Length: 240
Ligand code: DC
Image (tube, rainbow, N blue to C red; front, side):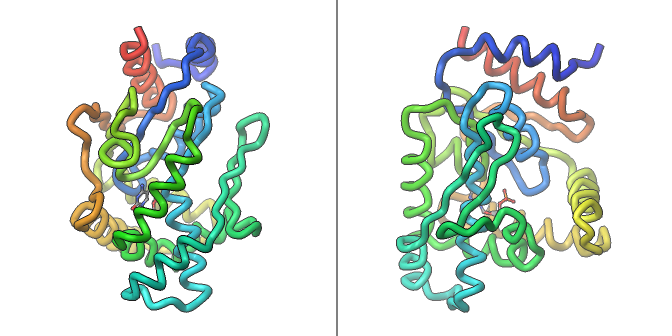
């Protein structure tokens, strides 16, 4: 029998403790959907760190900052206020950049193109990591990104490394673009994903990497509730 989200909800409500659940993995591996749902089920904060890098990238593009200029990017990170606001019912998370709602702007193809190179900058990452730890202080968090388990929250009680085949990831991104009315061929998406994988996993600072104590979940053939069920089994084992 496939797990249903309803059955899972009853188990989730038993978890009272404030944990840090770190979910890392490459683009389009399904992290956002499950991390958001899991946070909602647990009543935890959903910390979408990719959204923070995206918001900063959007500002850098708007201000025409040279992406080679590390000091300018650091200055930018220092003087920018990024906030993630969760609805009281945990259904939506909005991203604010200096008070402006940029939730959809940060998902544009232009931001998709530049976010990986900008995220390689060491000083900028230091600032982001500081903010991410501050946001998570003293609360239950589902944190999603590339370096959650390795760098930002090495003490996280649960670490998941979520992967899926390249074909499946291309298909998921293509479906997402279709739903948002963005026209793009699968070939173009393949190039976009491969380029991001390469930059994210080969950069010097905090590359995309599985933490030693993280558990790999390959969700190529899983639906959302099956992936959530797998993560839940890992969480339950950890808190027993
Ligand atoms: O998860 P995402 O696709 O929204 O992330 C966008 C980019 O942000 C990703 O290609 C690399 C960067 N990123 C990062 O370097 N570290 C994180 N913790 C999260 C995202």
